Amino acid sequence: MTLIKSISGIRGTIGGPVGEGLTPVDIVKFTYAYCDRLRVRRPKQAGERYKVVVGKDARISGEMVENLVCGTLIACGVDVVKAGFASTPTTEMAVIFSQADGGIILTASHNPKQWNALKLLNEKGEFLTAEEGGDILACAEKEDFDFADIDSIGSIVEEDFTDRHLDAVLALPQVDVEAVRKAGFTVVVDAVNSVGGIIMPRLLKRLGVKCIELNCNPDGNFAHNPEPLPANLVELSETVVREKADLGVSVDPDVDRLAFICENGEPFVEEYTLVSVADYLLECAEKEGRKDLATVSNLSSSRALRDVTEKHGGTYYASAVGEVNVTTLMHKVGALIGGEGNGGVIYPAIHAGRDAMVGVALFLSNLAHKKMKVSQLKKTYPQYFIAKNKIQLSDKALIDKILSELQVIYKDENVNTLDGVKISFEAKKQWVHLRKSNTEPIIRIYAEAQDQASAEALARQVIEVADKIIG
Image (tube, rainbow, N blue to C red; front, side):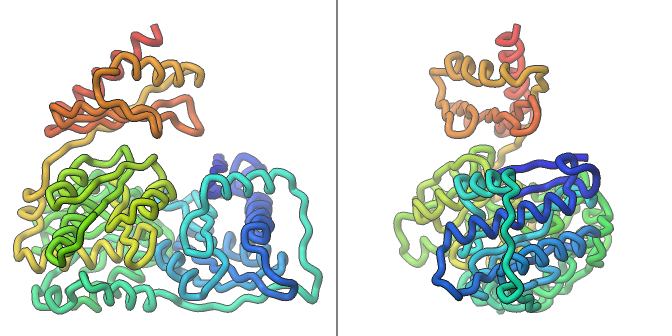
């Protein structure tokens, strides 16, 4: 059993002793701590009510976790807007629609069905800062509870925000509904039997797209490993080819990550979800005569975003890994578009959170304008390949030693220490990024180059250097 506490929330496997799995006691503690810190973060006048939105993906444990969270919230005197089955971006939007003080998303994202989590939002529907998350962790550890009296307990109302979310997506000027409808696309959707099976077919039908549903029954029995990686999307690839579809769409259980399959059954590659959408939006903005265009992704994401940004005369910025770090930097630089290489598209014109519905609508609009097959579209972007490795260590103390000495060894290259150590070999358009795990004595290694063999060779080179440092 596993329980992981972090500044972005709490996640774990369901069941087991307190402290080892995500138990009812843990859920109550952290929900209470969220309420306690909410009062500090957003003070109100006496008699004013707090309001929090709660949404969940379709995990089997969802109803149990939802009941505990909602019960704790009203016991703290907080009114609850229960969004029910809702994607993560839908819940984020619901906070805005409801003018709520915050939100709690019940999802373990791409983790298997035995996992669940509480992801915590502020009044903007965005994830809490590191400092705010740290305050909640400290409060939960104190276990100093003080619940509302009977005349002050909260209430619960239920509301489905799915269509309001889709209305907002389709209202975006860059989403060309008419062009998509005229294109007559056929799209296969694999929603891994979670809430994507509710919202994604509805979006495609409103766009006039023929939707073939695969694993779209939101019962929480994931048909395969829910992370939208090529190895887990064999059925989707085969269905796209068999049905002669134009595109395959895969989303994770809470629908904030997005991966495409080309018409020939080959992966579009998750890294290129953001790249393709960004290229389209930058092109639109450039035609409108907009200046000072900026994009943001994290340090472990593909260089291809930087390349397409600079092609359109814009500036690319890199953040530390983590959605809140990406959105914080996006706000700071006024980014047009941003996200993460794991298929996360963040378009602040609608809201500052990863949103697969926004990604699909913009991608199809671009495809309709370009009038080419998905595999042909992929070839128009800079081609890079990523290799993922890790170094397993027996002692966490060795991690800092390795990262510190690598900075010295590669001092003549472009070294970034914002988040771990990233070494960029600009002449070869290659980079390698090393980050330590928060929970294990592991260094995760991402390397990128213009072909797979070179990316893997770069990773091996750095691993060999690290081995020598260890001795």
